[in-house]
Image (cartoon, rainbow, N blue to C red; front, side):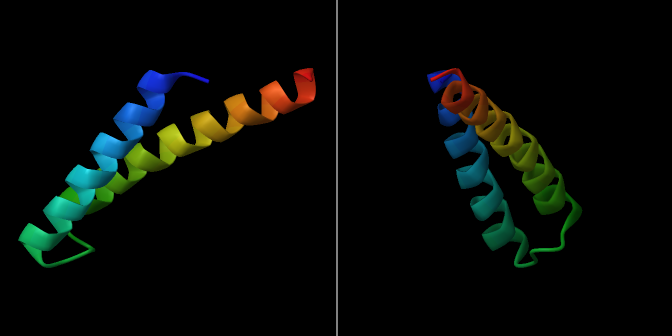
Length: 56
């Protein structure tokens, strides 16, 4: 699995939480944009894990 993806995922998560706290609104467009970006990475990581599991 790509360690860089995991690092990127953690950085995005931290930024999303920080932005939500600063904006005091989970529905702020910046928070939603970060969340959607994070979702894409999570799906990518899950797909990689699924493929690795199938290969073994």
